[in-house]
Length: 56
Image (tube, rainbow, N blue to C red; front, side):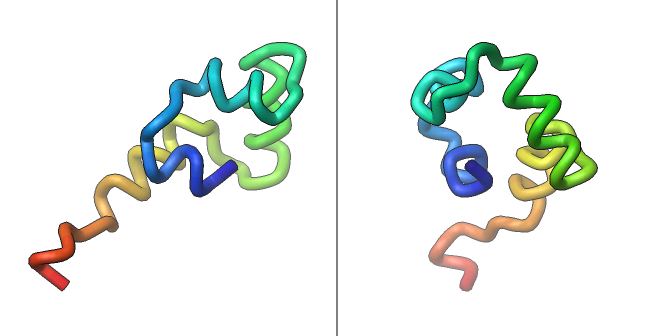
């Protein structure tokens, strides 16, 4: 799931559906329970750390 959030190709609703969760709220609660972060907070952290290929 972390990869799906980082690559930002799918919405959280689409991710929850693909992973078989009954709702986005259920997915978010499980993600926070495991990581300590909400999916949106995790996504913001990763956005700040990723560098474009030309800057690597």
